[in-house]
Image (tube, rainbow, N blue to C red):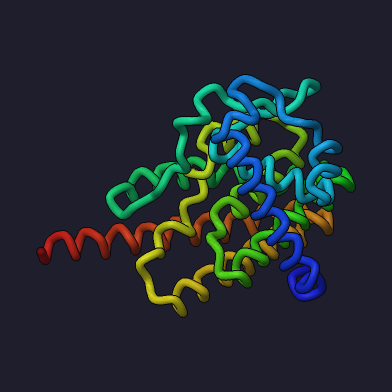
Amino acid sequence: MAGVQGRVDVRKNGTLVSRLIDDLRQSIASGAFAPGGRLPTEAQLSETHGVSRTVVREAIAALRADHLVDARQGSGVYVLKTAATVQPERIDKDRVASVLEVLEIRTPLEIEAAGLAALRRSPSQEEYIFDCHARVFACIEAGEPIREADFALHLAIAEATNNPQFSSFLRSHGVAAIPQAEIVTDAQQDRQVAYHKQLYKEHEAIVLAISNGDEDVAREAMKAHLKGSQVRHRELLRDGRLRSGSR
């Protein structure tokens, strides 16, 4: 399987991505990359930080998910003017209902996106989807939050449709479209690990179907993943209401 074959390299890649994200965040916060200014090119960042372009792309995807930068086709990646005040959005139990609403909207769109990605993905897009999937594995292995990596994977699939409307929808919601990693932070560690591994298996079924060019299986795998997320969120919502009522 992809996760097993890439185990050693994935850990290294995940660490490099995390370090680059931290470096770029610090540069933005310090003003080294000023609001409205353009970041160095992918090639320049790769050379400066001694990392591959894949690592650079994953780091930029994470910054975009946190609304710190924006990519402009044919122009480059720019620091958003509000980057200094934007903080990563956090999901708590009081907002599970709105999270469920986003999941319901995502489901039909991403089912279709998975099918189209299986038909339309280019070799480089396919490779990047595998890279993003590996990043999720690296986060799980390192015990790190998987939310940004999860978002990057779904965004990579949306971009592989080569229809910009799919990726535009995900970007409009940012990381808030991928709330799963945040809703179990108060759970026991073993439960959280099992939860993340379940997400990884669901992602793997999607990724392999896209790689195999099987649009029907890709759609079914995405449907199972997002429908499963809805079930998990509804259970959380019911649990939250019961606890609230018992206080």
